[in-house]
Length: 187
Image (tube, rainbow, N blue to C red):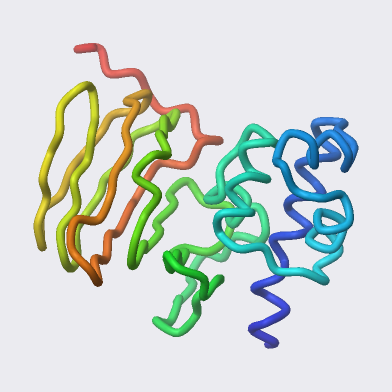
């Protein structure tokens, strides 16, 4: 299997999502601030977007990078993701830990993270600090997490986070956005 070819398959997922929304490349370019030629190259798997560019495309398409990664790779019932199987090598390093369109997504974030970017996911999410330390803002409170700490957030919680020490690694596990999570009767 050609690892480089697999890494580029996110372009097909971008094209499928854009077409499903009946958007032109020009509209996605305008929404994302990226050029039409670059987006065309991404869709045709001739260019590999940085994580920042892919996030801009995901925002323009009303989705997330995680969902684009999942849509880029068919689901497997058993799959091993080796430590060297990184999708992107740009800083910060973001590596999917689960490939394919599953009910669960897991990502490893290494290095710096855009602290200004706010997230809100439809379903529940768990953050685990494997190394280093992070600060998470959620529901108007700041949480400082160190190595081995976890933070659980139910779906719908707006949050942002940043690494507070170099060489931080965070694992994020979330219920996929396409899953309709059961409502908690206590909420």
